[in-house]
Image 1 (cartoon, rainbow, N blue to C red):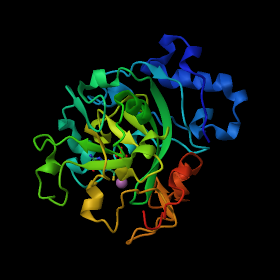
Image 2: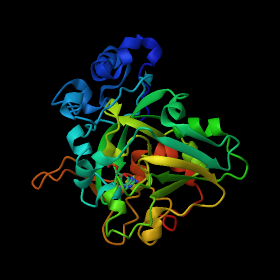
Image 3: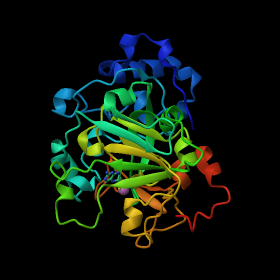
Length: 337
Ligand SMILES: Nc1nc2c(c(=O)[nH]1)N[C@H]1C(S)=C(S)[C@@H](COP(=O)(O)O)O[C@H]1N2
Ligand SMILES: [Mo]
């Protein structure tokens, strides 16, 4: 399941600029194809069908990609034989309640999000708390591409190529104290730019907050993403910094993060606060534990249509059990949903 592509050291710096990201990765895949089982390559890699990156070119998405992503490493965790979701779907079918509750609202409204300058605060139970401009916050880390399934608790899913760095790398840097047992993530609160925070949708007690157990946060699959499809994150996907935890339901992956706190107690999360009987703290993807109002046994993979709903079986831990199941030995996943 884990595939390591040739590392950046194998190619010239000019090969890893975002402009040539897609093409040179294809070249790398081609060159190393013999070394990889063909069945483990993502479907788009064999050049059949339209590129899922269509529309990624800056000209096709004005204003979305303000800068290039420097320092990117050729490393991917891919999904076996599954196509990457077209860029268009990944950026026009979103949950980001700060910008509205309809799937198309974030694409329509998130243009008002001001991502520069952006400050990230690290606080709580850490030896090295701090307040960083995003550029400085990111600087120590080599960006990697991670191609992950994203499974929303609402039973739809996508496959998205993220760009980011392991959350574990940040945690090692900030030195959690012996009291640190959980990590809490907080999204921007800015009613001026976020219409959902000033509307009548008072269900949510802003800001949006999420959390992980520290050992979950240290798992190598958990990343902080700053980009997708080889470019900066579009605002509707949580620019400029969002969490991605691929074995958990999508709501764990908090967008537009401004504060990361190490804490000793399990933090209160947004969806748990709204409906604890429907959305637990763990929120591991689990086809055997239904949502009280619908089954979680299967999911609709986007893009899907009325006549081609594209239904697939949901996998335990969203297919990442090999990497994460050991985190939960001895835990009743039915109670701790
Ligand atoms: N701040 C914030 N983060 C959020 C949400 C939100 O409403 N606000 N929605 C979550 C949900 S329910 C999902 S499924 C994913 C969707 O990510 P995507 O739009 O990039 O696919 O973001 C998650 N992160
Ligand atoms: Mo979701």
